[in-house]
Image 1 (tube, rainbow, N blue to C red):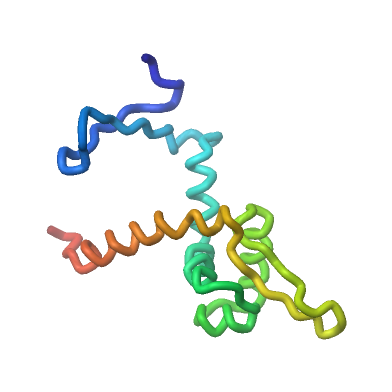
Image 2: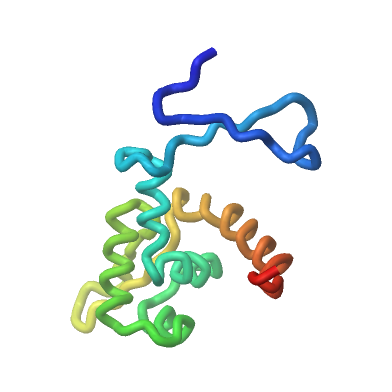
Length: 134
């Protein structure tokens, strides 16, 4: 069966196989590729760290700033709004009257990032101290 245009087959390492399987990977170099768009969204400097912080549960912006040293209030707000627009984060108003109190939590879509991020952490733990020159 021919592959869709812009896709290619990648052989699976033998230790991953449980039978004859190949992985079909979209052409992430193509500008319209959904995988590329997802990677571009998640590659923003603070997004993955915000996801990690919110895996602990709903948090107010001040809590997130304490957990993410180095992020400015402006960048945190921009990041949370963009993640809300992408459906990864939900904003809940806890108190309407001034001063307004809000908290952020991962949506069900945002929570689906837990397993891939855990895999990245496991990979980093295994390979993080490896000498890149070898």
